[in-house]
Length: 324
Ligand code: NDP
Image (cartoon, rainbow, N blue to C red; front, top):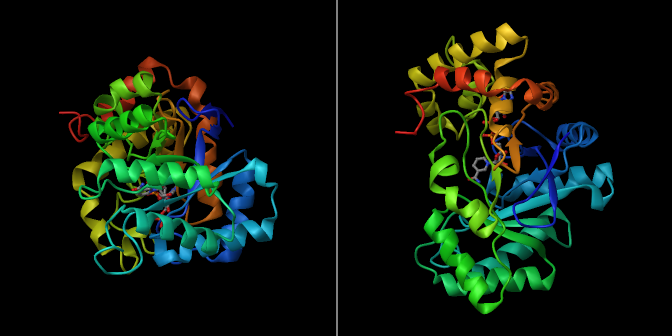
């Protein structure tokens, strides 16, 4: 495994990490979560991603129970959670980052995880209503209280991240360290263009999500939607819209290159995301331990990903990505 500094912070994250979205609470129970987390940890993964909203809080409960079961040394792994959507309706509890919600939210997450602190705490989306000053002070207070070690954002615009960073800088508060954007061969604009000035400018780190575009970049949607796959799950019907014919066709082209060099399509797509040096960690997802084992081997392909091979991979997905 390779370890990278999370932006300008002192902490190092494994270049491949593991998240619980969709899977925990629907496809994965405590025992299978423990088996996959154990395997991931043995393969060098040191970061496990979670969020309050995943499976309505159940994902944090499952991950917390699985980690307790494994009893891994706390210093050897990092865990995150994210706040924004909330678990209840109500003007102060849903789609908000107001101070009251954030303070109550982190306490709820820690209780469900059964932990005294998380390593990374994300504002899961930007909140146009809560004043940025209130938000930055609150994230600072949470970090200062020891309930989170670092804070960051997810899917914020470059402008919003810079605004938060500048408030923290001016007031001598804890600064946001990382953003969590989507990054894969179809969704590239934010990471490669919009955020370009933030990497050296404020030392932004990235924990990127959906490297396989929810599994499409494994190539397995070539013959329609496979039984038991994410797109067949109750409650995730909306994801089917993402299985666009042009995406499936691009994944098939990628498959030809993968076969030529003796790797799987998923491994090639993952290796491509890891090959961007601005990415601190690529958060993978797995509904089965076999997927995790397959996906972690993407690291071994990195030395072979030269400019020529990268150009071929990018050519396979040209015209269907968001770099217009
Ligand atoms: P991916 O795009 O990699 O999709 C993972 C899914 O693809 C798996 O659950 C599995 O689904 C399928 N899959 C994985 N590997 C293979 C393989 N080798 N062969 C065939 N199918 C495979 O990542 P996710 O969308 O799960 O995102 C990763 C993590 O990122 C999440 O767990 C979460 O922590 C984070 N995230 C953050 C978001 C944010 O807003 N900040 C949003 C979304 C995710 P199946 O077997 O069911 O088909």
